[in-house]
Length: 394
Image 1 (cartoon, rainbow, N blue to C red):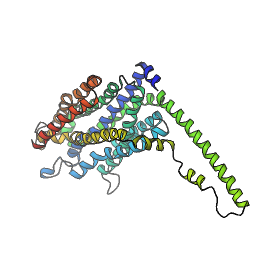
Image 2 (cartoon, rainbow, N blue to C red):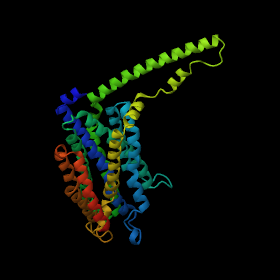
Image 3 (cartoon, helix red, strand yellow):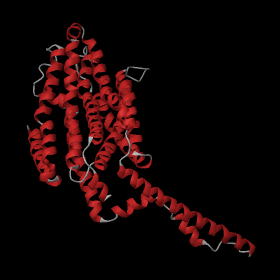
Image 4 (spheres, rainbow, N blue to C red):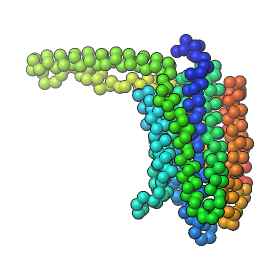
């Protein structure tokens, strides 16, 4: 593995794989955060004739339901597809997760009130949970694939660059929202129900980056590092299977002798215990590795930090349209033309990301190897703490 690290150099094949992984994060971010704009549009489509403060606004229960759907699917997808990536192969499951995302994105765009009791929000929720399942496979597999292809010298930079593409996805969603709304502007101002086409197109266009890179994913090979580890694991499993067969043969021989001697019980209880204690090699290795505190604390530290970040990150980004409306940047929800309000809201989303997350991503890309992972994370959390306190009490 050390020789493999030394021989790993940036070449066209690696650039192609990094591009596929970067587009994956861009696509995932678009699919996740486009719902922020779509939820606002759904308010105009389905509640334009409501009265008072409920006009042009999706009720909180439906708004929350369609916004958390992808996150629910992501949790399941990360656990299931991430595990299958170890057992079946990275690129095989990586391709499968993309195909799930493409199919469910298209299906989401055609969501409608199918039967009584299943309104458009419930159907959209179901499809977006399944979309999240596919995206959930992308998250661990993209990070793992990049880390396995990169050498230790540039691993931090390359992984950060791939994650930084998420910022472009955050910007792309409101840009598409502005373009599509502008194309339908006159018809929207004449009849607000024409926005029904707009939100469907915004969601449906989310499958384009995935379709564009599907062939590359299908033809990707697992990294040499993964192939080497899989070969070692296969050899070890074959050796364990051979030992197991020997134990079984000894047990059968002992049982036969016991029956001939008229014994009621087999004398080979030790063999039975050995067979009962036989566990999959990966599970045993995982348990042994993380039974040591020096390894476990790294896992807990990174996972808890990521969890704490995501609570705030998704909470803000999935509701940025609400924040922009609250500060009055988008205009008047009840008096302005719907097309004007939507375009202004999308513009606010673009400004927030262009001035905030996108520069933050790329500053990290170019400084991570010099400042270090821990230093950048401590700086980021310190600034986030200050900013969230300001936001909370503003």
